[in-house]
Length: 161
Image: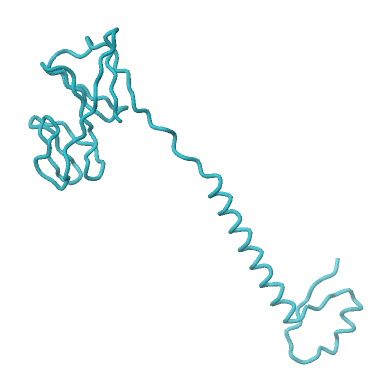
């Protein structure tokens, strides 16, 4: 296997013929720089190709569930307030029927906390009344109201669309 040595002298190397006879190849400065920039270009090309392949292989997030079967309406006594964690909502059973509110603050999406006076966002201090209406900001909207349907067999279906 030939051994590569570098000739970095500007003057002609007098031992060049002797080194070539011994099986050593001499690389000039010009050949070394050409080899280095071609190697750098090849490396950049492979890195770019890797980025392109990652871009083309992008997977969308799975579709979010928008309907939840909450079970029989009898499981929720009148006056109850039941958190539905998988839907990020809270279900109220009032005299007028069932109502659901989002527990996600419309300001930046923090999970609001239920208090005796309504709801409070622990992140930035927005306050909401018991019906989800805005009392104080920085949020500019009230909590989102979700639709609750009751099926013929008495099950509650929560829609968060």
